[in-house]
Image (cartoon, rainbow, N blue to C red; front, side, top):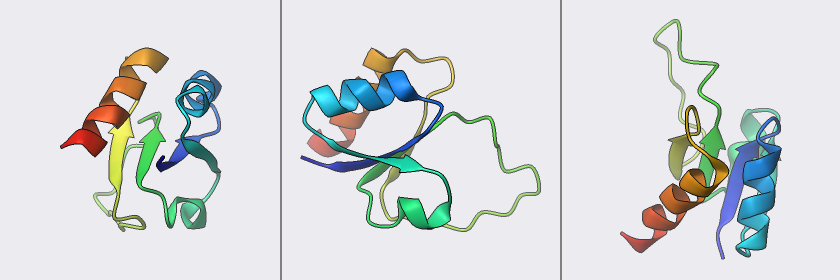
Length: 81
């Protein structure tokens, strides 16, 4: 399965993705995202200054307003397309 980076505050999403068989890595800093196929973030730390440095080639999913189940569906959709 995929290696998914998840912000530490999204523990319900982490648990759901692990149950699906994915390898889950907690995102504490930029280097944690390296090598991840996909990252799930809260969206609370939006890019206020308009600067964006890509640290991963994988997709980034914003979990804001979504349930853990909906986030898992989005993750699955990323790998099916």
